[in-house]
Image (tube, rainbow, N blue to C red):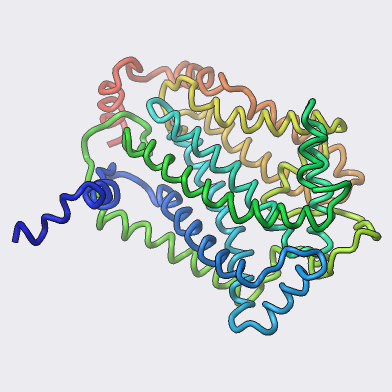
Length: 403
């Protein structure tokens, strides 16, 4: 019997068993902690459907749009592959955003898990960088003009901006070389996403998962299998049902109607609307008159997300910090308002609202020292709290107060 199960002691298999089966997990994790595994499922779904779609696509301005139409009409199950991949990308980005905000609310990025947040921000950048070329590949009207507007923004980067734009275009305007480059990027970047995901998981498992209390604890942990696998299955089934409803009953729900028209550089659309997950960033760019200022604002947002991990926390979870909790929901509401502004035309009253909303968003998002200051304010307002220099005291204090 020992010889029969000796294979489990091999280095690769034992490592997989340690991280996937016997991984010690805090027993009080909520359903929101299932967003991470759900994002992994979405990644696998996008990789499989993307590989199958790449077999039927030709990155040529004269053939790309007709390839999509041929896939939809003549290839068995082609319509399902296309709608699964396009709407699956929306579900993937939605899950990743919720996962990011869950970590922000519970301060899952705090010491010693700083690099979990760092690689998470890198993953978000790679996902956005992969989604944009994929949006251009069908070569519809909105894809063409979206590529023209977004790639020209790179010219605001000092010194190398114009060189980057010329390299992306492959000429003097968006044309066939641009589509070829975007097709290559859309195929190569997923490999970087997979590698970054593995590093993200390795960083997480180095110190273990956080918990809703946000305090240091080595007690009350159980193996992740089978308990949390079954718990994560609830979110997986719910999201799968939601995706199935969109794919089978309203596949064009999140697609712009103009993208059903082949790209034509002569008529300019009256209003350019990117995919919903680009709308907050698009609103930031559009609300700041200076092109360089818009690029700098986006860079500051991502820089603040990264630097947030290195800020000191008194009580980590926002559940015990009313001021931080209020600021969190203010930031979340402002992000939704930015997304709404991004899909509105450039006219009154959307212009003044669009200029005030990014200002409020940046005031909250680009202040790396805010969590530490908020933690001090929360403790002062509450007039109670543990000794933050002793994690075990924090654990005992929270258990006495909330159990």
